[in-house]
Image 1 (tube, one colour):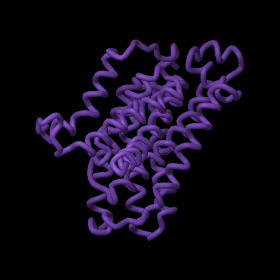
Image 2 (cartoon, one colour):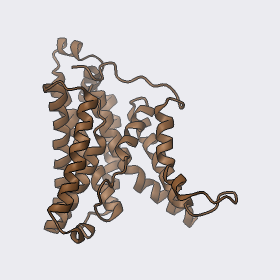
Image 3 (cartoon, one colour):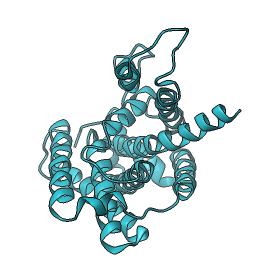
Length: 283
């Protein structure tokens, strides 16, 4: 029973950042903006949360900085794709590289490394509550609210949406603001789970969250389930690592690769074909 409870707690702790990032990616892509920049937003939020919390001693200010950083990166993606009309994949990779380089510099140049490892953080349970609330709001909002219908309309056909009187850019800015807040929470939770910031600590979680969105067919409820499933795979790795399975000693590297193998399987379509929003990537 203790092992099961430990496993369940690990699933929540490891799966919730993926849930938050997946919901953020879902909102973005449903608006028509392809978002491979989830990784950069998570990493930027984790770094900013750590830096500000360590400098001020306030975990609330740290969380605020994380939310602001992820939101700025989100709005940067809107600017690159909608104003400059840069290819969405290229723009997303640019955001990821800016975040990777910026966090590496900031963590080493702006503050003592010992302070980063002891940065104060909010309780995990607070993030769990916010994560559940976010999932409920987005699942209900997609199906039952006017903003949700506008999001679907713009994501499916921005040209027809304009003819109906909608502003695709306004809808997309709202969607990316939501994405920034969700990724900010996800990055702060990753930091809280780890206990301190290290370079590249998100370790591909943004891409795993995007895989959950694709696997779920861009549906919020299914995206939450897929993200938690990826969290369960990671929790299973932690639970079984170092222990023989059916008498066979499995190398640590094999366990570490499990989440990424599952991501590749999801992206190659072996678990079922899905269709993206028809207006994804269109102006």
